[in-house]
Image (cartoon, rainbow, N blue to C red; front, side):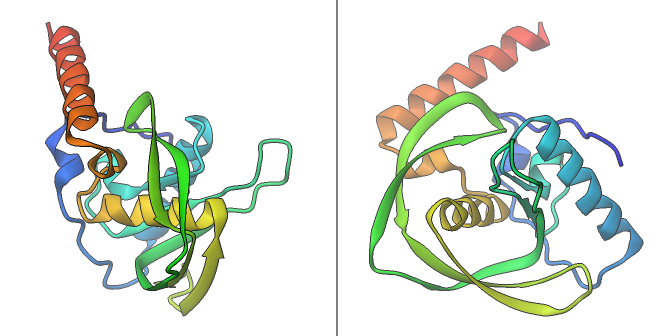
Length: 171
């Protein structure tokens, strides 16, 4: 397993739409393991493959707290098939937008259909943090960032800050 470098805003790869995974191959299994290792190292509760520069529809999530046993799930080609009318506001952050947080309103509960690493189709209902995390990571697969759910003013301010930092780091 390898810890892979994270793609950071304003890198345009974060805006790409990820491609579906056709089959579970050794490469996909290695990608999932590397994603989990990278996610735990960061540390984070979720990671989309695009965040390590791989435009595949793969997501890893583990919402257990650090003092709890790890309970990772790999979601391949995840799609939301149902969401509740009840909404929830959560203070979200993102490994690709380090040290920035913003309140995002999303459906409180979702049902997601995905393929697991055995190639089986699974449906999972989620609420609370897991529901928020699933929606956040599936957004990544579609080139959407959590800051896109904020006001234009806040979003523009964040993009400008990270663009300036990227320029400074490149110099």
